[in-house]
Length: 212
Ligand code: GLN
Image (cartoon, rainbow, N blue to C red):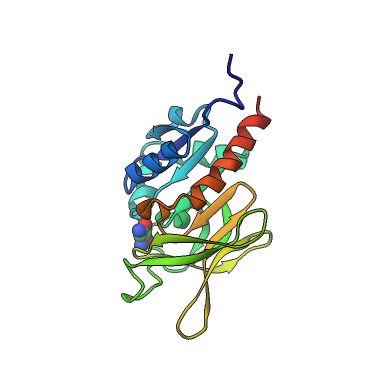
């Protein structure tokens, strides 16, 4: 029998709206079994969860309509590793500087984000981003920026794992991690760069192994 730790980990991709397929494809390529998450029962037994990009206000609304909001928060608080990209990062945050009317966030990583923070020159462009792996060192990620948010406040215990230096020399945080929660402003799944997802899957495998 294959033990739980050796088997492919099961990673959920929140599939209410947004760029779901590209995440699923990349995760499968990296050895995960993917489950699309649309209702609370879909969260059961997951080893990790991805919140895709899209429109954070729509995803927020749909998580509430489908009764996913509270079980998702509970699962991550219990230690389920989660990766949010773009709108997914906005959802993970504790605060949005410029929320749409009635917009709620999940409050799972103590950061404040500014939506649509990059101008047209960076927007929708492919960029080479610096990436600090969890264990230290330096890497780069090729990713797309699409109406990307910026992290403008990092709470205690939150580390910046990707920082852009713009033309004016300003440091702009576009990747954060705290424990099992990672959020990035950009879309590595759109270029197929597996750096961020592979690191996430390491965390997922550790989490799955610890539960055997
Ligand atoms: N600006 C979008 C939002 O507020 C995010 C864009 C994206 O996910 N590509 O949700």
